[in-house]
Length: 133
Ligand code: T46
View 1 (spheres, rainbow, N blue to C red):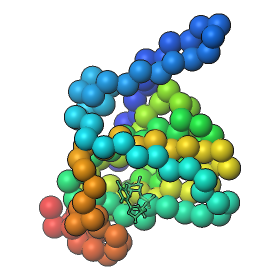
View 2 (view 1 turned 180 degrees about the vertical axis):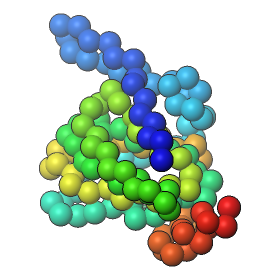
View 3 (view 1 turned 90 degrees about the vertical axis):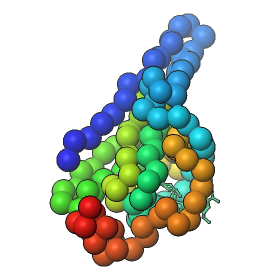
View 4 (view 1 turned 90 degrees about the horizontal axis):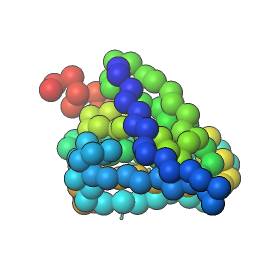
């Protein structure tokens, strides 16, 4: 499985750092929704699903977390700990997020609005879905 990370333009000077992200340039889709996850308690895990049509880019803008990606054949573990690096999580990839540092803020840019019907929340259902593609 190919892992795609995206290096966002970083503008650093003596005042600090600024990261700019533009849709269809740095992000390979039009951004219809942004959400962020924080205050994850030690040991808590999130995700454990795939999406049928949603594409997303994850960036840990503060702190760190681990993301496990699974295409049904292969699993890859990625550590997100750079506010200027995005991780592409396209549709049909099972993902699990864990080991959040106490200060972690995980920002997600998504290609569509929230829709519960787009989730594959059962792993066997996910395998059937990707193997039947
Ligand atoms: C994903 C990973 C990376 C909404 O009402 N609107 C939203 O836009 C989202 C994302 C969630 N919700 C509600 C649905 C649940 O009642 O927020 C609650 C928590 O969502 P969930 O348990 O799906 O959160 P995670 O962290 O397991 O997964 C989230 C996204 O839902 C998911 O699309 O890919 O982050």
